[in-house]
Image 1 (cartoon, rainbow, N blue to C red):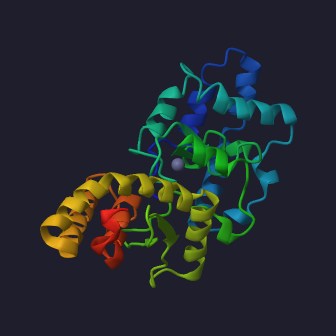
Image 2: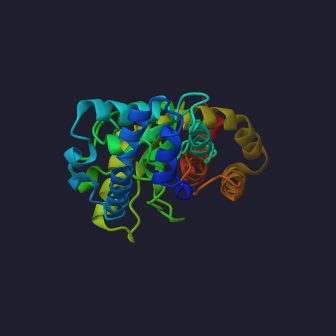
Length: 283
Ligand SMILES: [Zn+2]
């Protein structure tokens, strides 16, 4: 849910570097013969992502006819790009370290690259940088090897989808002790129906409501001492001012977006009369 710049490396450069150190001349030439097909596949893929028509792509057009060629294209990723000391490993590292955290959940640490379209079904895109998204292992595993079945199932692609600064993440505070928050997609009026459906699908399939809720519960527990002290000094108004000030500070942070769960949690607490007047006091 965090946009990233489109990688500077092209599909041709990356593919060419991957196969550059293959010692078997006939294998290297065989794979070199696929280079134009890889570039074409990358172009078709890029257009489809921008048009939200990835679900219409036929996997058969993205896999070589011969099984042994398909296997070699997969090895381009595992052995010639991702493996330590692989010829294209610097590109892998560059893609992986681009964001401060996983752009899909905007919370966890990046540990891998996720294939937006699975390499098992789209092997011509196995090392295409536009198909490689830095991700945490949880988002990578949750997405798995699935491809979208319809436009509404097209998860957000950080290189091509930018939701801007509009706030779409909402949260409500449960009025009970210990309190917790429920997160949801609060569709802005400027979004069309398809974008709203895609963001909801992305949010649901990656389990972001549960992730943010669990983080927020711990965060609120840590806040309660400070909130109680504010309450002792100035009552509910002081608690609200304290929370709103914290929310502003978080939003001003260099790597924080208005849709990160932290400022959204603080905003939800600040707008809860119950939390500011009694909930912040705990049991
Ligand atoms: Zn993630």
